[in-house]
Length: 274
Image (cartoon, rainbow, N blue to C red; front, top):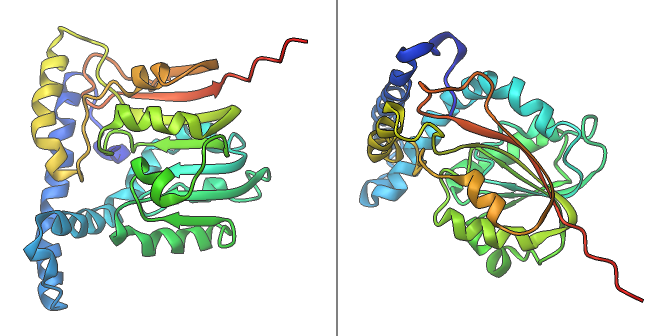
């Protein structure tokens, strides 16, 4: 998750950034409860997981556009003109990045599967797909990334581009899922990534602070974890022909929510010996 530009502190004050974001999320529990009562939608009160889905969907409707505004300068060069063929969009949420997949910006895209297990976000996701002119291209799959082969019908070696933007921090068993997603890529296929990662400043204060924050953060951000070494897991997923990964711009020893951004290209099959 990214902070709106106007509330992004610098230097040591940046250590307080996660507390600010948590306060934003906590506030939205109140209107969620009120709305559920007014609409007589009482079912989420009997399941904390269902309530958290409603809570996060309402919070993200407010915060998502602001997060996108802050991250757009970093994500746009990654997505625009890099996605091609059949794409797998993992954890798209409400579809805040779909406008970057529009045909005018990515004419080589033929199909996009949006893998989003939170059904409360499907309405907004389909609406944003239509707004981006992807109505006949974008298909929502309502299952977890770990269920793509069994419930999603996606077969190995059929995907040209995998896109993970701020989602590997939230999916369950991420290391296992990354290894399961790798075979879905065609040889020469590309994985586009912009993700939270474990801080590289091990042993510094931010290392311990990040671990403390991670005890609380997932409860306010729909299961998001901020201490996952997703970049390392990606590198270990299989054989890569080319790796272009770099840290987030300007991030350093006071960032509790550091990122990794870039592409990984799957190794081509070795030619058969005559």
